[in-house]
Image: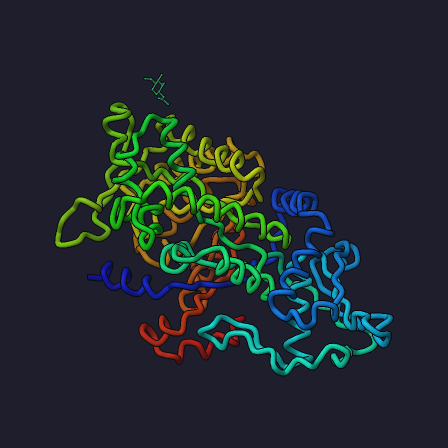
Length: 460
Ligand SMILES: *[C@@H]1O[C@H](CO)[C@@H](O)[C@H](O)[C@H]1NC(C)=O
């Protein structure tokens, strides 16, 4: 019953957003920031991306703004944006406002800031008011900012967006036009760490084919578009499937566009990694492989056909081989990676053993797979399992969180405004984490009443 309730509630989790990483210094993360600075798209590409956004958002003002990428040094070594009056603002056809930022995301967030605080505009999702720009004065009459300009520094490195289930409930129905709009929205909100999960089944198909799995093996593995999250996270296999080849191919084409645009803005898209989730056919393809069948997460009419999925044992050499191949195949296909990978092994699934050694070796195998494919890999993990399943007591949590060196994993405190795990786990036992909050009105109304939104202000 509890599971069914959570399934239902989870269905409403179509959007989860948030932000705020506790500022954390580790040599590995500092090195990763440097790599991101170095590998970010060239300045003209990011400036062009923001200009493209302006053309879509407010084409009448295409010449009113000038955008410029600046170095981190101009922002005291952090990420920031600066809004100033353009020096030649009073001349004909000159831009009126100049917005500078360390990345395209910072500039876009600066544009949003200006439109909101100087022009009373509102930019949001359709369901929360949409885009309202009627109050923006005509070109030539834009309100000036104070003489010294506006300087806004990002207090934390990352603003994260999405939940693993958003992919199925919302994004699986989206075309490029809709995605483009969402990526624009992300940039305007200052989001720089979005999940990029689209098209991964096409990658899995290539990887599993290399391990001699057949198309029909995979038909029983991938879920239908609305249930992808559950087949990806080893909750249900094959439910709503199979997926036609054209769909797989088209999603991969879409993913390439999504990634390219995210990189153009200077974002850090997060790709998926291997969690040990394998097709049932592993038993016939690799009769000696060590696999565990998981429990019944959810079944339909008590039919166990879709539940009770298979988890590869971390001690099996196939674990790291498949993990490595999956990362390599993505890098080959996309040409680049931001080095941050999401992986959730026990999302609402209870582990087969509570032995901390088992849990620790599983975490280590997941990370070894990632790192064998990308030596600078950082593992981004949802903290949802710790909220959901009382299985996770301090010894088990510590075993998973400390299964990789500190700084190689970042945890999302997924439900932090209601049930903060950081508070009961001594800040995730020293593992860096991102404070995160679901923003879904229907979720709040249904589960807690709107009152639970009230204390949010004081906690942000
Ligand atoms: C796939 O099958 C071929 C032919 O039987 C075999 O040579 C190869 O080793 C298999 N690949 C894997 C990853 O087991």
